[in-house]
Image 1 (cartoon, rainbow, N blue to C red):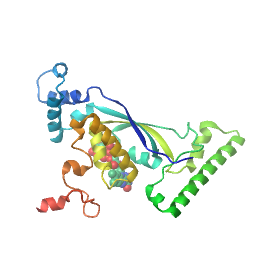
Image 2: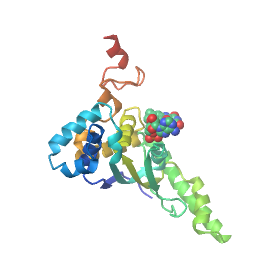
Image 3: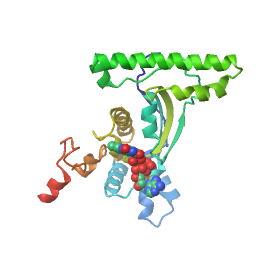
Image 4: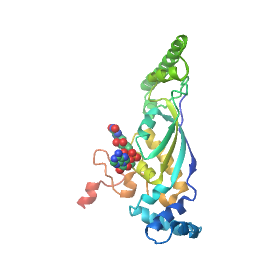
Length: 244
Ligand SMILES: Cc1cc2nc3c(=O)[nH]c(=O)nc-3n(C[C@H](O)[C@H](O)[C@H](O)COP(=O)(O)OP(=O)(O)OC[C@H]3O[C@@H](n4cnc5c(N)ncnc54)[C@H](O)[C@@H]3O)c2cc1C
């Protein structure tokens, strides 16, 4: 049992991502066959990048769906993946708690609890107790002839949301922009926000022509749509802009 640490790795993405989006954008305004546009596209990434940025920032987003990014993620909690998988335009494959026994499970500790020793001590205590109960349940079931995935799938009912998990996530660029808009915002929960920022950093590095103008929704909107109660004040409120 130990503290889990976020690890993320881009394990694959669509080849020639900029050219693919460029060709998809160009097809919309051309009577040429897109196969020929692709063959003629050349290596002028500056020209392609400028065209793609302009089209995408104008709100024409469907060309972005042709390019996908696949991330390997570990060291996140089940609380995080429960939120992550709500984003439906994506593909997920997650470590199973049926097929993988959780003896000695790692867990994610909220930084706020670390700041308050009494809360942290309680948190660590219950993690150990859960571990003991989980192991005990498996032992009892084994005595009664039940083991493997049948035992694991029921013993897991005692596991906490803090339990560490691993997941493979594939999203296309349009969905990534949508995901960042919601999950890079300070209103998003801290753990999924940290993950979203790591993914954004990777995407900006691989495909700046698409991702440099995006982040939390305020980055592209240039105002905060969250209202006075929730704004982080990085951008003026929508109401303030309209008042002006
Ligand atoms: C700050 C914050 C707080 C939240 N709090 C809660 C909460 O308290 N309870 C809760 O249950 N959830 C909560 N959520 C989750 C939220 O409601 C969404 O389920 C989640 O953010 C996924 O967003 P999405 O549906 O836009 O994304 P995706 O599923 O990725 O969909 C992307 C877009 O595709 C379109 N789309 C997808 N499916 C459909 C469909 N069936 N019909 C029409 N259009 C569709 C929509 O335009 C959607 O925005 C919260 C999210 C955030 C960011």
